[in-house]
Every structure is written in C-alpha cells, then in structure tokens.
Length: 248
Ligand SMILES: NC(=O)c1ccc[n+]([C@@H]2O[C@H](COP(=O)([O-])OP(=O)(O)OC[C@H]3O[C@@H](n4cnc5c(N)ncnc54)[C@H](OP(=O)(O)O)[C@@H]3O)[C@@H](O)[C@H]2O)c1
Image (cartoon, rainbow, N blue to C red; front, side, top):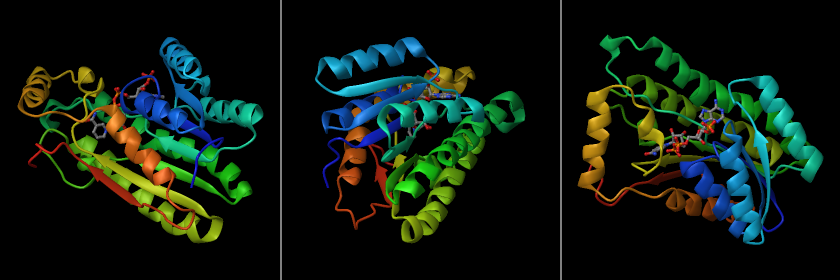
C-alpha cells in the first residue's frame, strides 16, 4: 500500500530515530508533521525535507503537556485535514541504579515514555476513528521485552509501551480499522545516551559503541515505512530490530 500523500505525525522528530523516520516517510511520499520541543532542529529538518521535494510541517510540542499535544494535533488537522500515521517516538533513557534514588529521572521517564505516548494517542485516535483508518507506531525497545540492570525504570516504561500497543491493536484493529505496530529496537546511534547523568552507565554506553556497529536511525525509519506500506489487510504488529553484533 503506497503512503504517497498520506499524513504522518512523528513525535521526537528533532533528533535520532524520529528525525530519520520523518525523512524516510517523506521520501516515501508522506506529508510529515515534525513534533518535539526544539523548534530550531524541527525547522532545519523541515527545510531538508522540502529541499528534497517533500512536504513537512514543524510543530512545537511537549508530549507531557496534554494541552500542547491537543494544540499540535489541531494545527496538523487544520493544515492537512487527516492523520494517517502516528509515530509515538519521543522518549528518554537516563540510566542509574535504583539505590541512587534519582527519583526525578524516574518520574521524567514515566511522564515522557508512557504518559506522553498516551497523551498523543488520545489526541490522534479520535481523528483516525472518524476516518475509519490509520496506523499507530509505538516506540518500545528491546528493554520492552527484557529487563537489564540499571535500566529498571526505563524497562518498566518500555514494557508498558509494549503492553499498551498489544491491547490497543486488539481494540482498534477490528473495530476501527486502525493498525498498530510496536517497534523494539536494540542499540541505535542517537542522542539518547547523552542524557545519562550517571558517569558509570554513561561510560558503559560509550564502551558498547566501541564493541559493535550500532543501528542508525534510518534503519528503524525503513522498517516503519515497510510496515506502513504493507497491504491494507496486514498489521505488522511487532518489529524487533537489532544490530547483528548485539548478542544479548
Ligand atoms: N537509541 C536507542 O538505542 C534506542 C533503542 C530502543 C528504543 N529507543 C527509543 O527510541 C525513541 C527515540 O529515541 P532516540 O534514540 O532517537 O533518542 P534522541 O535522539 O534523544 O531522541 C529523543 C527525542 O524525544 C524528544 N522528546 C524528549 N522529551 C520530549 C517531550 N517532553 N516532548 C516532545 N518530545 C520529546 C526529543 O526532542 P526534544 O528534546 O526536542 O523535545 C528527541 O527528538 C525513544 O522512545 C527511545 O526510548 C532508542
């Protein structure tokens, strides 16, 4: 199924997987709304897409704030009239051991990775239900399938995303003709690790990057385009995408 002319909203589009996915969707012919907080990054990505002949809209959005999400979704519907693809991608991963009690970081992960995803889903679904069509991509992780030491809260948030995706698929597929895909990447080279405040875990991630060739954001973007282009009766419900050298 071609996605030419379809309208996509990508959260966390200012860097990493979100930015690369927006580019891939635009290359495949979709009109892409780029949502995140860093307006300068969104503007330059928008310019890159339009310079290549694509169509894009930059939308300042904080997924934690329902009013910001609702306003962004309204801007998008006013501009393009529909929403066919939602990529719920915004997220963060400040790793630390539980006994360091970085409770603010735990709350931030729950707020962005879980509540932010729910806020965006709640704002977009009514439009998809009205259209009786749509495709929601939820960015989980290998950490949404397994638990790793130092990632307890992050794993909890990504397991929540995996569980929510499966339930959402069961509810909105048969009833509203909306497809749901849960993406579970392994290690991807992005800004995600820059936000780790614990020096030990920060170093561990740098060491890991020296031990294997990480995925690029574009690798995930391509799998999203693949699932979005599947025939209308097919829901690619899960995509578990890893570096070949990631042996865990
Ligand atoms: N990199 C990996 O190895 C990996 C593996 C598995 C899963 N993932 C998941 O992939 C997703 C994207 O991460 P990434 O690796 O591409 O990291 P990244 O480069 O740090 O991108 C994170 C994105 O989330 C956005 N974001 C953060 N807080 C936000 C908020 N409150 N409102 C709106 N946007 C917000 C950031 O934009 P602003 O700061 O401009 O708002 C940024 O665009 C995350 O959900 C992450 O958990 C990553």
